[in-house]
Structure formats: C-alpha cells, structure tokens
Length: 292
Image (cartoon, rainbow, N blue to C red; front, side, top):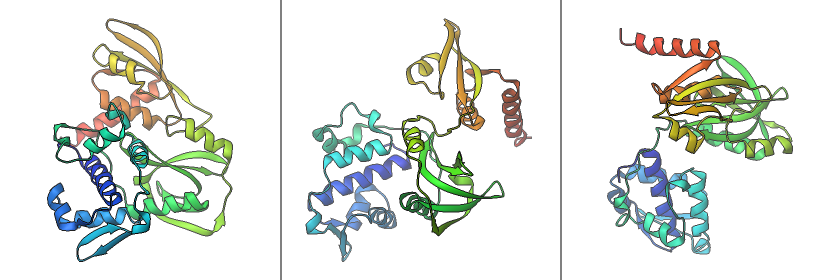
C-alpha cells in the first residue's frame, strides 16, 4: 500500500489486534516480512500494544486466553475514529473492516494524507497519565517556565497540542515546543466540567473568549474545497461569485490560520487585518531568504 508512516502504523496495529483477538499465534519475523518492515519495528508495535495482555515466547506473540474475544470490531471502529480516518472509508461494517485489514485484499488502496510531526513518546505518555490522573505539570515553553493543569491532548492538521489551564485561563501548547516536562505528582487538580464540555464540542484546538476576526479571499480553484469542508475555524461565507469568495474566520491563535493559508497559497489572500498580512510576508521572506 502506498500510504505514509502514520497510516502504515495504524493499519499494522489494527491488523495485529484483530488477529491476536482471534486467538492466533503471530511470529514477529513473519509479521516483519508480511508488512515489509524490520523486526525492530514490529517490536515497537508490540510495545504500543502493551495495554493488552500479550504473551511472548520464542519470537511468537499471542493474547492471554482470558482476554480472547475482548477486542471487537466496535473497538476497531473506535480506533479508526480516534485516528481521525473513519471518513476515508464508505462503511465501517464488520465485513468491510475485515477486508480493510487483510493485506491480500487492501492493495487496491492508495492513501496519501497530510504529513505528521514526530513527537517524543516519553513526553506524550507522561502527559496522558497526568491528564488521566489530574496531575499538574510543568515545562519550558518559548524559554518561559509554565505550570499547567492539563486537560486534553488534541491532534490538528498533523500536529499535537496540549490544552491546559494556566492561572485560570485555557491555553494551547504545541507539543513539539514543550521542553523539560515534569509532573508534580503531589499536586492534583479538579477539572472544570463545563470547560471539558467546551473542549469536547469545539472543532478546533485554540479556545479563548477573545477571538480575532480575519477576512480572506479564496479564488475559484480553492472555493469548492472550502465550501465543502469548512477548513477554517468558525468559517463564514460573506460573498461569492464565479471568481471566488470572501470568508471570515475567527481564531484566538493566528498561527492556526496562517498554517492553513500557507498550505493554500497561491489560491488564498488575506484581506484583513494588516497585521496578519505582515506576519505572512515575514514568514515568506524568511523562507525565501534560506535560498539566497
């Protein structure tokens, strides 16, 4: 399959879980050959599945007998939804999932998603535990020491972000920029249920009561994509004709919108505010300056 690493991993894990759940004994060497990866990659996959009672002996893995049948196709559906790829497929019925996870049948698929950033597993797992156990965390961000009540890890446009409360305000932190992470094991906090509900229903990562309005022009080539998918946060169409359309978007974090704009150049233009035009110009000049 011509898929990128993120999707290869998701497919391998789902396929492995399905076969283990059926009571199969899987050879690490044979799995490596089947997926055309080395055995170290399969070993890392097994580590990722450490939440399951996997037994290993002489290079062969199996699921503990008491756990057989506990992983259902409903679990696999949830797994695809968690990965955000359920809309790639027309149906998630059991027969379709069986075909999807069968290497002999899924060679007809060619999936080329957006690129995904690489993040450190240790920090990711430590933040997960802190969120589940309601522990305060500390880290350096833009060379400033922060102390945060972590609420959620959220994925958006190929990047992971931490949503947390600092001094009573909800803030967003890019995981790749978090340094020197520590967990204050003796400091608990009680999550705000109302805030949790807002985070769950909000389509975008950057939550704030103060959002900046941005007006953009999208040309006729890109217009159908924006109309169908509502790519921009809080997107609203102001006007349109055969040449394109004007839209407004609201965000409390300019980098969120700038990243989308950069992906759609030259089919998108900033009409206002001027400060955002200047930031985009600086970014473009910085990029072009790398080639001088």
